[in-house]
Image (tube, rainbow, N blue to C red; front, side, top):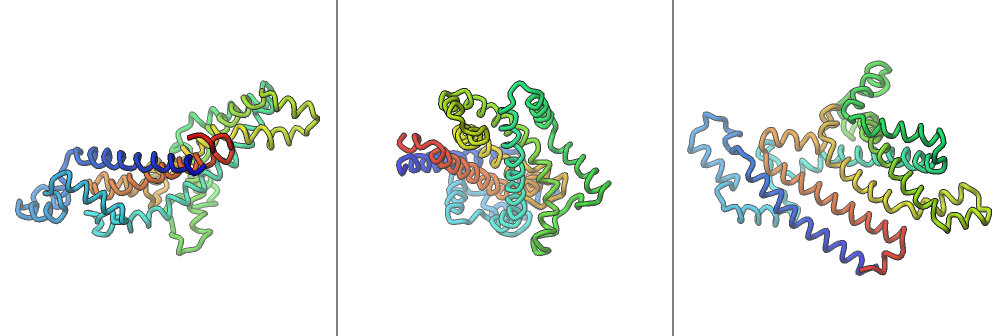
Length: 315
């Protein structure tokens, strides 16, 4: 188990190093001068030169990368050109919205998808299976931003049960904050639940055809025990894979939803930083998201080892 985890950690570390190089290189070749964007097209050359020096844009590319990478190791992500504040503070403020939103969406997706997938697999070929998978296919096909607009019209405009957008802040209390995240979480969760339900059904069908499942049924075990105790555990590996990918997507891919609901999250921060060419913010947020994806993948690998003990002895 120790060797298994050590190998995954080394792979994750190598991934972060390569990703940092790629992110830095890609953003550096993006056209446009941050100093010129900040001061305007009519800025004096002396003012531009001074600002470039303050921002470190005059240094060689390698030195700028090493300064940036070494700073991230100690938690210094630099200072935003636009907001004139440390990038780590901006990320912390926005993550307080995006992280609960991603977790709430993931919980909703899992709670919906697993029972639907197991229900459909246990009734393979029957009308219940067809209807369940048909609804799931519709959920996969519907764009989440369009679904978000429908939710706003129904629950915020017509029924007036929840706010249509904005975020009051956690200082206003737990319930107001959660209430503001309900519609965005549903808009994110339902399409992901549709995907997860289909994966769960496929994994369950594969497991239900195994000999040990037939043996368990032949011994007279209750159907519920066979499904939830024997079949589900052995079908969890592909499900865990999708869950890990979905959490990474929910954390990093909320730019459209956060703009639809006007939420001050990481997605909206990246969108604003790109439009203002605040590269240091974009680099910091992207690397944080890459690190979160790597961490989630390591946790998923640990979940594999828990679900399937045979993996603990593999190198």
